[in-house]
Length: 109
Image (cartoon, rainbow, N blue to C red; front, side):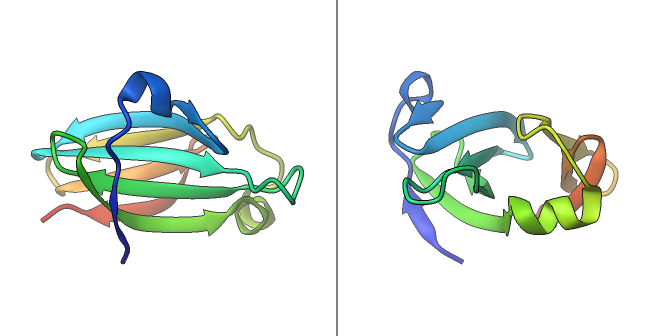
């Protein structure tokens, strides 16, 4: 698990370099952000990343990473911007959904 500093303000980081912020939520005293990254050298390819951050968004940890190619093998065609984060208060989890399909469930400690 990588620990990263994510100190770019929300207004700027929503489309910073090759990163595009798709969705964010606050749950159980942490911020969760899902974004995708598109490398310069690979047009049309991108990877999804899910980060958990402190409530100030200064310290973040990558908790999920998957290529869009592997997601499309499971889901077929999908909208790259159709990623949502859904908290489950009873189960203490955050679920990443793409086109309404759950692709990752993160247990919140």
